[in-house]
Image 1: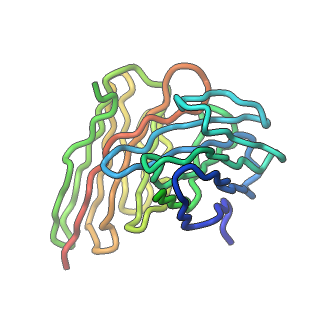
Image 2 (image 1 turned 90 degrees about the vertical axis):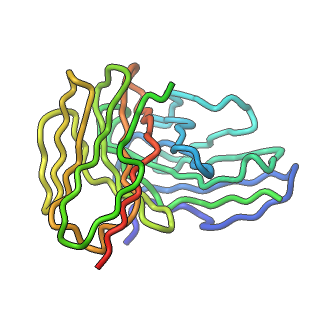
Image 3 (image 1 turned 135 degrees about the horizontal axis):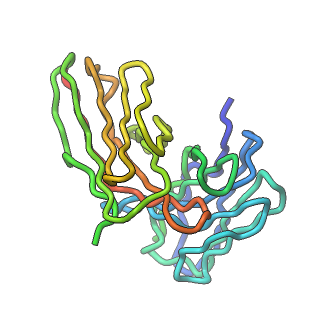
Length: 113
Length: 110
């Protein structure tokens, strides 16, 4: 059974629209993360949460908003979508926030037209 | 500049050959991790290795924190080892932020 679930697997959106990427982990971890992988760029850290509190935010834009309704959920809301937002978004988790092995979900591939 | 440098960028092997992948860090770091990225995208953690040597089957990871480097050795390569190998470091404030390298693309031919 998958331990980190991301939904949807693929997502196509139009410029200017809003989407929510879902992430749930069933590893009993206390920290969760979002990363982005664009074409020809290394994986980029976006956010980290520990016990549902924001620890670090490396996104330059307020259009990206994480939402944590439960300890094992960390969704990512993206508003006013742009073609440059096209990427694969990965959710990850670890036992603690820092100094701990991170495990990644399967990713959501977002295409903005 | 790039904080995490991986070499080589790509590597082609015949099945059965060994491979040595390198990761060098331009700054001090707290820990590092090796991942395998499947064609198709998902990441699999291979080693969480802040220091020393760890082995799992045909894979061995060695990290020398003081020298800011880590290596991944693959012995007796198999075609199923093909894919991208990524290293990532964690440094600074205890937020879990990983900084990734560009990866090494490995192709193993039968």
